[in-house]
Every structure is written in C-alpha cells, then in structure tokens.
Image 1 (spheres, rainbow, N blue to C red):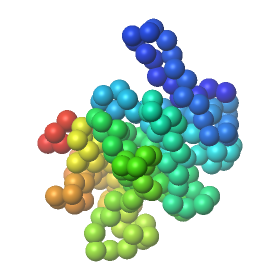
Image 2: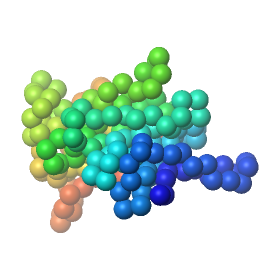
Image 3: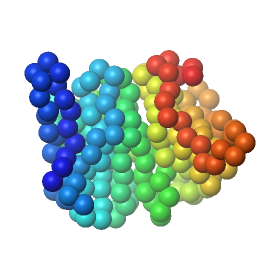
Image 4: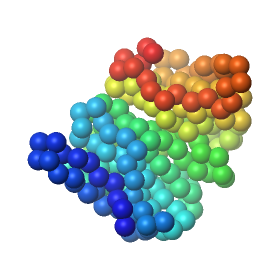
Length: 188
C-alpha cells in the first residue's frame, strides 16, 4: 500500500512514514503538509477502509495518531506551523468537515483537537457555530485560515487568539472560498 513519505535531499532518498494499520483504495496514509523547519510531516492515515485519523510524524516521536473527538468520525491534518507545535485540519462530526487544531503536548505527542468557534460564547457542538475545515497556518501558529461553509455563508476565514473568528467576505461568483496560504507573520 502507498504511504506518506518525505524526500531527504541530503541523502537522496525517500523516507516512508508508515500508517495506522488500515488501507483504503491501496492507500495506508498520505501527507498533506510539512513544517517550515522540515521536522514534522502531517496528514491522514487509515484505521480501516472507512475511517482515518489525522497523523503527525517527527524523527524523535515517529508517527503519532492525532485521534478523533468522536468514535466513528474521521480527521485529517492539512497544515502545520514552522516548528511543528500547531497542526490544523478537519474533524468530521455529522458529515461536514469542521476546523480542528492540535497543539503539541510538552510531555510528548499532541493534545486532543479543539474546534474553532465562530462565536466564542456559543456552543462547541453546534455545527452552525463551528468554523469549516482549516487549510492554512502562519509560521508561528498564531493565525489559522480555512474553508467557508454553511456556518458563515461559504466565506473564507481566519482566526487568531487576538481577533477571534473573522469571515473574509466573498468575491462575486466565488462559491465556497478558502484560505490556501498565510504569510509567515500572519498579516497576509
């Protein structure tokens, strides 16, 4: 089965990173992002043919299962900040992919994912208050961006501790918008 990997230019070789035991369509795992310092690769690994979990790999801890907040629901890691301390992606709940943020646990691995709330005083289980899938993160991990969905009129969005959730508006005929990249300092 194919699996996530990275290419080590110093040694001129591919390093395969494994999976979590499942295979779907011949795929054990897939990489979706790499930290700016090149130490952390993130993505998805199959638990079974119908369920996958977000994963992160680094040389000292190996492949880490980032888990799911819901027993039968899948997750995926899409991006990681420069030093691998903040991973972002999605958590499936009842069908729509919603924002998920995993923060490095100082004692090893990552803490369970947390959602991004549109209204921080609102419910953390109401899908109309949960931001859509995360797709990008600033180098320092302070600004996260993602996909618009039904909860915010399909508008791309950013989130920061300082400003909370901010819908970015829409261009005419844009359809569903998303943030594909964020500058290192989070300003663009």
